[in-house]
Image (tube, rainbow, N blue to C red; front, side, top):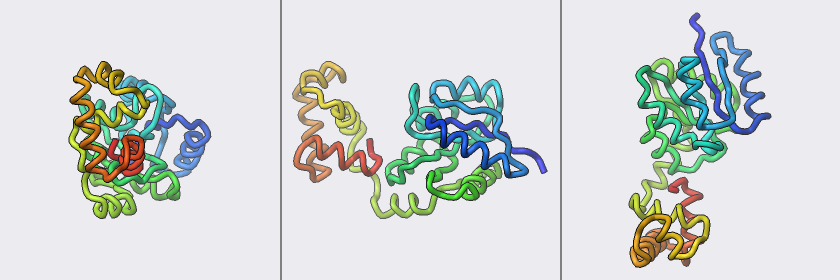
Length: 203
């Protein structure tokens, strides 16, 4: 039985240690490296050449989806699996667009993660069924790329003028994008629109 080499990128130290300990009990799985930062992953992948990289979505340095996109440009193949607390339906589409092979929720048994690792190495996709069903029910995001960009920038609750400067758009254009996003999400204001879009994984 050939070993499957794994790199784990997860910023929560206790969870990372637990996953490494549990995966080490599987005869065919070996964790060859770990990191708590997204911006360290590519360098470790080039050095360690893992078969699979397990990625958290929210990490310092670089988020998991950005890392997954980065790894698609390597000159050698590597599979990626998102391991996340959040089963937001929008994450599935974003993950697939980033070239991810699997998406597993953190509250599932370690056997589910081990199975997902084996599936993606075999060339299959391993998507959590709950997330897949939620994504089908929810449908795709109604926001355009620009509306999502402006709404995401507005998370920091800056003024229109500050957002305008940050995004290099006119104040009127920023207002129009925010207004359009608020309307599409049936929100009362931009704070509510941000909460709605964030809860669905659309930002």
